Image (tube, rainbow, N blue to C red; front, side, top):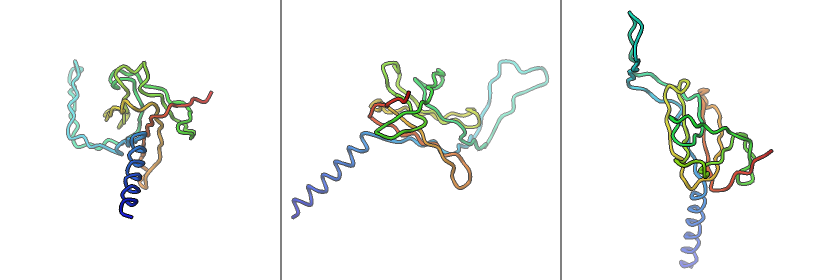
Length: 154
């Protein structure tokens, strides 16, 4: 009986491991707090100076997937597609032969004044995004990625 129980538990652990190995998710934080930001401007007009920003709360208002780091501005366009048999409105092919430096998720705050970025695991082949609002009307953006190929809808 103990041997059967051990095999059953080991099987459940293996199944759980396989599921998490095939997909994972990245959730954009709802807001970030900037301690201090000093903007560097080449030349301010006479009589003007740059104001420092302190202790400001920046709210999430944008998100996307990039080929390479977002600073290179190669944002990928979302498409309607099917992943693991389910249709999603915003999907992406990731880690293709064209993505030499991998893919990155960017969460933008206050019109991308601040961006948090995270690299997508290189074993992932497709991602989709879901968005909703919390009880305080703050946006919640979640990216889920899979080792399955994206099926595009034409």
